[in-house]
Image: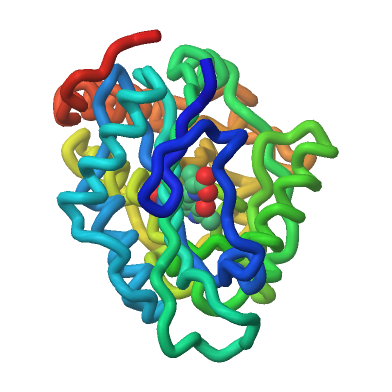
Length: 294
Ligand code: PDD
């Protein structure tokens, strides 16, 4: 069955969906995106994801492509047309099509692309049972990592290095030796004293929707946490480590570079948080009407 995408007002098979070569997303990475998880036919934390999408648009001065209710309708229609029940929906908005010029065009209509992909939760949970490895790379990004832009080249280079070394993710290390975040996830440790730590929200990281949800869950589970910088040295000594994102949930990390984390198995904090997150997704997400399994 052909996958169907929404591209600038039309639903069409992915293979026939095209963008103009003068789209500023294509030429300048002049655009933003969101990835929202769909679990058991429910969109997870759609509202904060759309809030962040609107914030990214506003930070880059890209005009609103359509109203929020319209965007929500299209997201649901894409999911229905693709019979996706477990997976992700990808939403991208670029500044639009205009003759190539670095300065913003006087008039350009933002381009909108929405499509979805199947991604079974079961596989992810299987991976979480054993945990994953991360490597570390220098953080080579710009100073506005809080905007979810499609300009992801340093992230791609880091992830590729991770893949080449058989790792799941690369943690990016800033010039002072602090861990900022993964290439497509937020980074966490649990200190020897049993405190959950993640980098504070600033312009140096993407403030993950999953990150914020995990902090709220940590609080309701009575787990101590701190939003503060931590160094790679501290991470090497950590009792536990974890990455979080819409596509990784709360994934235990058992090795950082060549250093085994704790006893080399997923720890208690990660297990409690993953369980709490799964329960949250199950109980608090609203089903997409009319979704059918393929
Ligand atoms: N990435 N940090 C970066 C650099 C990310 O790209 C992401 C998400 C996150 C976690 O954000 P959230 O919890 O809202 O998913 C942190 C998505 C999944 C991606 O690019 O595919």
